[in-house]
Image (tube, rainbow, N blue to C red; front, side, top):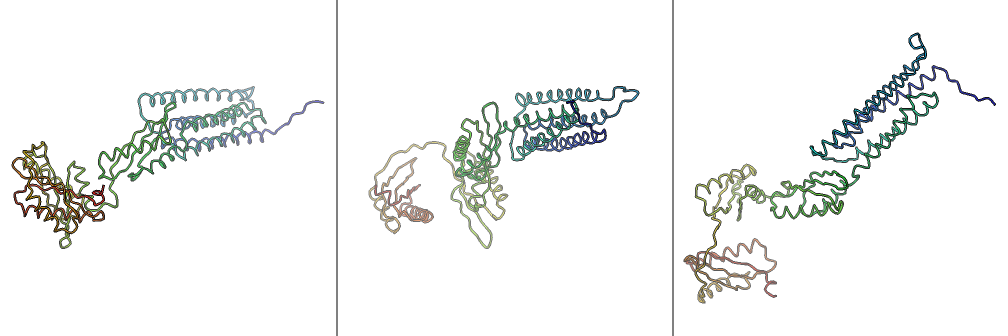
Length: 428
């Protein structure tokens, strides 16, 4: 039985070949634009390389469309064998473009490996674009291959093979990103106690190792030691997700909504590396007045100390404009160890001090009274037992009143130190 072959009309063949080539051009334009946007926003060399690859595909698709349009022209006086060779020429151009793209990708990879430091932030959009690209490449590879086989078109067949390989290259890029790791790290780190916010998380991979760079928000009045403790806890949380990751944690001071005026004053002092205490605020006729104690190096002159206080007060008024006035009591911060002359035993004075303490109903017991003479001055220290449930503010007031009464009874006392203890502590 003789073989049969299907004969197609030239008009139908040209329409179908040009239509599938035209659709390929539109798809390449859309994919290239998406990859460029996502590649720039994520900083992924893989996606940027895919964007360059898709740009090449766009040019190749345009060349294929033009070559199909030209190759379908009938033979003429200048081209007695037709225009079919234009498809071979288009393949040559595509090869050259591919070579240039490879050179750029290699150059960019070397730059990033040895010169530049680029952070990569994989996102849902990045994965969505890559999967969309794979679906489109699969669709147009099938469409081009079908028309190529139908009309024996070498140009369309080459394009179909080209786009089928693109599916694998896009798959490799997807595998090179740590899918879901960023969200898992944010979830783990957010559980760390003392953390206000996770400001930024960046992850990159080099070989078989991950590198994580995090910025975390902490209350601005936390100490440096506490900041280090939180950073260590964040590192542990990251290692729970990526055990062998190299982790860098940066803490950023943040003002919290729950800050009161005392917190704000101390935060400004901490920022200037000053230690303030006994901060009190009075509301007089709608105006806030602040009083505070500031410790400064005892070796400073009065002028130097006053200049520092003036700077601090200016900073506080700038940060807390509702404050009308500030009065700072300057205290000398000891820089030397004092040598005590002797420890005294004064039964009469000790008995009188205990009698004064008994006048305060909240003081359950007074013990461990110690009297010292340092540089010719008398120092007294003692322990006072009080109820466990007594508010700290009341404890402070009682200690202050007791100190005043001690000095009234014994004006020769230079310093009095009262150590309050809960009643349960003394039952041990």
